[in-house]
Image 1 (cartoon, one colour):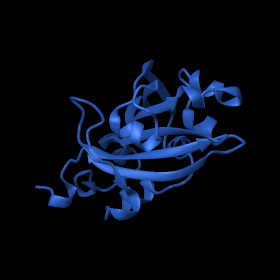
Image 2 (tube, one colour):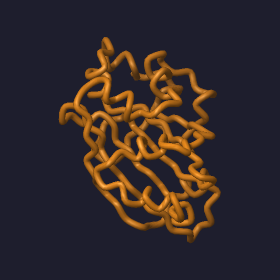
Image 3 (cartoon, rainbow, N blue to C red):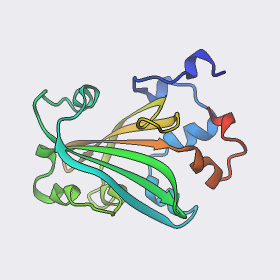
Image 4 (cartoon, rainbow, N blue to C red):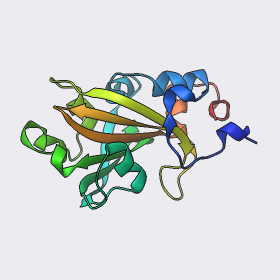
Length: 179
């Protein structure tokens, strides 16, 4: 049974306020590109999923300081290593953030958003939240981080859930020891 503080939670909490297993904190606090880090562990690929202009969830609107009826591009992808899903990701890009040089962020297809964010001018990750939860119905409970990035002065959110297979790929001793 998980300690009370580690039960699945629907709330994102500031990363610096959580006590996490060291291996989890190392990955969640890493300020660099997750894509580049993953590429060191196998053949990397982005599998596109949901991609539509829609209304962000209430918690996402709050983190972006977005008015209730403001639409955003919602993009959900799975990051794979050697054809194994290791990260489930959801990006929320307000339409007002997809203008000018940022327009390309709305047309990523099977390309990594992370690589684009770290191209010059690099983004600023101004906040990181974390939670233990499930990225979607019928998916396992796992650690996730949500980051607010500022790219060319415009905000966007990226949530990344580190699926159990990731820890096997990167040589963690036991997946259960990371929960």
